[in-house]
Image (cartoon, rainbow, N blue to C red):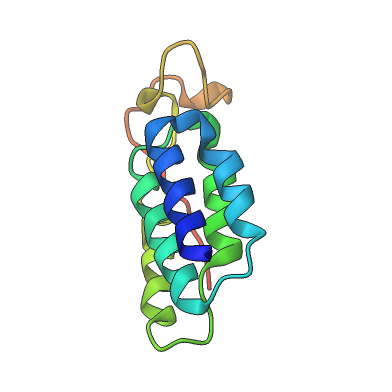
Length: 120
């Protein structure tokens, strides 16, 4: 039954990106096996590549809180999550002009992107 719920939530998330956060909340509250959590984490990693700026905090929090533990591939999956977060481009040049991500006075003319640094 859990796999059909997961498939439905994934389908809803793909069909309507604004449902990303409610779908993540629903998935996070389900009693899933390690294998199912690994699948969900991989799906969330795929979503990370195309996530809208407004959903980025919720998605990264979900990834950090729900990365599978206790299975042989969890170490490599944790490494993938950390690497994906390190490679996230941050800064206003990567987002719509309507939304300024960086309000510090020295960053207005910078063209380089910053990466999230996560120490494990």
